[in-house]
Length: 157
Length: 97
Image 1: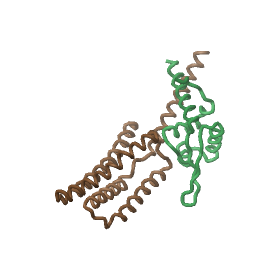
Image 2: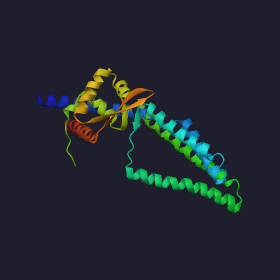
Image 3: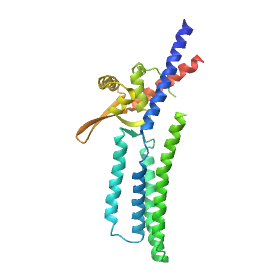
């Protein structure tokens, strides 16, 4: 009797664990990475801004900032429309550290472009740096997509 | 290290699924939970109420295009209770081997 009871209990526990795994996967599947086209446009905008500021062309700076803000809001809204928001495992301290690292990199890219442009007359340098930043953002967006697909295709198999 | 603990509030199939869905995420909207569980609004509301009363989940309301949306997340207490419950389930399974 005891063995039978234990057996049923463990079977029920296994069933519960299977259902937990299934629901966790269902939840994670709904968290989509940044949409490819929005991420690509954002990459182009940021790269263009870095290139133009590096080349000391400030005419389009305001419009670029507005477009970058609009794209960021669009990405956040697109993610929220899925009905789930991802759990960020980073602590507040880590987020601040990441921001502290990213912001100087952004300014470093602009200043490097300006320096190479004005000191060595490398007029192409700011555009090359802007292009590299765009490629960097694209690779982040596409690798996030690839790892998402890989993860869930693996689970499905 | 905390011991595993069987939680009768969480163990009910629908509530277990709600907690499992919320556990890897930050916030989940009401309609998503309803669709994933394939239950009616009233059934889901009943289970959510029980989890809220136990202090395991909390809701936030937001308006999108004039329509109210309810978002749910596991509280620290809820997350802990769910983790201990899963630990206990694993212990039961291991114990039977």
